[in-house]
Length: 367
Image (cartoon, rainbow, N blue to C red; front, side, top):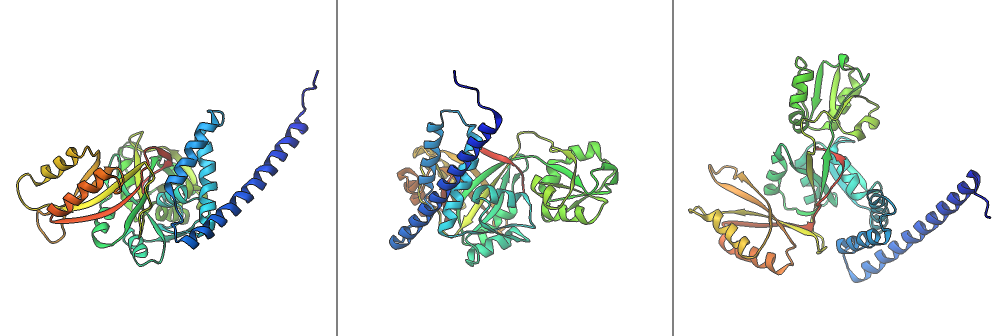
């Protein structure tokens, strides 16, 4: 009868497995660099979203539900993004300072090895991308409770960029301060969206404490780190970054809340097979104009994921519409519908086709 292994034996085997994994990771990285060189020779795009989707699907199938899939996806996401960035390291702009929720979304999407550049406004993120000073930007676009982030939508009217991807984050808001004691807090600072998403909790639990709106949750965390009497509503990343203490976790008013972020760049990626297409249109001023647009999409059997209106600046009672459609601009139905819309709309702009994020991927929030 075989003897039962003892703990040192099992640990030795774990070390052997870890060493094997490390050697295979190094080999995978070299393979990725070789592919990068071959792509340079043929002038092919570095990012192939369809190929990445195929990898995840193969891993899910081969895993047979043995290894927890969320953890498996997270591990290979970091491996894949690190290998991709070895071909060419990406520079990513986001609404700063460090440890905002937008920063958190960027790390989730691009991995730890990308170069991140914090900026002071959403408009600056758009500008840096448009002027090619960074390759990508991360911007919040809508919250499932508070609705559209209008700063981001309006920026699409001013800057020529393309949507390259999206990510959805489940919301968990934390009230933090230097001491961790709620009695020390005389002001609660945060971005306008988290303050709105926690208004009832604040009214019930801190009715006499004023709130202070600042341009990001990271800025609020910095203020809390520098002033013992300021509390901040901020991300889990900010807690460790600024050495803050948690007063209360999960103070958002509604569970199941999420925020959608967009990745912007100068060129949308190729078709992945699970895509979304976003357009911006202006309608001719006549009765039934919007219904005509919806009828065209319905006739092509196109699933409209979102429609959002924004007033046209300087033109009273004139509106532009943001439309998100399920599918890629290369799909015949989407391509034909967009061609028709381009002919009949007073204004038409393709904002991009990109891999869609159907699942909420980690705890996070708005900027």
